[in-house]
Image (cartoon, rainbow over all chains, first blue to last red):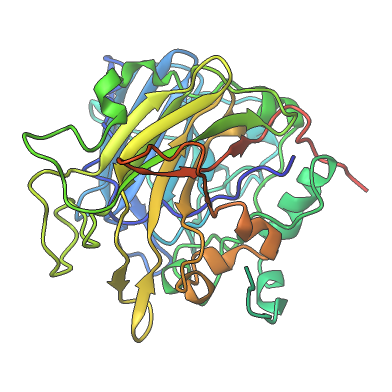
Amino acid sequence: MTPTPSQTVGPFFGFALPLVEGGRDLRVEGQVLDGAGEPVSDALVEAWHEDQFARCRTDEEGAFHFSAQRAPYLNVTVFARGLLRHLQTRMYFPGEGDEVLERVDPERRHTLIAQADGDVLRFDIRLQGQDETVFFL
Amino acid sequence: MRWPERNCSVYRLSEFAPVHNRRQGAVSDIEYEPPYLHPDYRATQLRAPTHRPVKLPDEWFHHTRGPAFGRIEVRPEDADLTRQHAGEPLGQRIVISGRVTDSDGRPVRNTLVEVWQANAGGRYVDPVDDHPAPLDPNFTGAGRCLTGGDGGYRFVTVKPGAYPWRNHANAWRPAHVHFSLFGPSLASRLVTQMYFPGDPLLSLDPILGSIPDPRGRELLVSSFDLETTIPEWALGYRWDIVLRGRDAVPVES
């Protein structure tokens, strides 16, 4: 059977999709940016690993945040107006790595690794252009 | 339904679609997934990735568990969008129902289905929506339910209106209901839109039109269904949903 095709989440999901806070220990902050380096103010970001699940959306600055517990990595899914299909990536915690990360061009690996910034972890998602985040299929 | 002939070369500008479709060779030869870059839909131009996605082993893509969505509360009344306020919303009352299966034909049980839509006048409650059509104090336009043992789902709502958007001159989105589904794995996650049969705006819509194969587009159009139509009360529309299952693995040539 043919799977049902994907369509964009559109700009108007904020009132309808409940947000989920995630774990407790660590705060993850990031920004979603487009190919011109402009903030993507209408993205939905989901992050999960095993029993952890967080769902958040970006604000006018393209900024998002959620809380997480330390794991080797989180699966990260990005939905937005202008994304006809969602994007799948991973956020690795600092110092972590595995065979999946090793498949990635060494020059682009840094786009998958969160950076410690004081008490928070920073993980930006660049949809297009310089330092474009690595997405998986 | 007739779809206009299109020059499809633009789709091949995207490196993503062919890669993806090779993955789906085992289940379908329909080029059903939209590409990331579809210039007719303007917002894709600065948001579509330009690098080829990194292909991972099938085990990762298809056998990684999906999110634990159980933290999103689902109450029985969430499936009836006409009873969330003191009064009844304006518009044509409708029932949307169908089955969720995976591409192997197995029912997807107990999975979260979230829907959202504009009201009958084509206006979303969302503060981002500035279309000057009236809000309806008796309609929010958001619902959720869990699929049953046979993968079935059912929502009661009102038919959403079409609304203008600024993609191109005199652009109107056809009436649609947004759907979000999780399923069991990373591969089964789906966010999409359901359309209504016979809508003259369907053939003009670059979002629906981003799907390369007309057979793929038809998968997003519901059917009017007299069987689920409730006499003296509401029109029935049927729409079945297929999530990627375990046989949706790549056939590498």
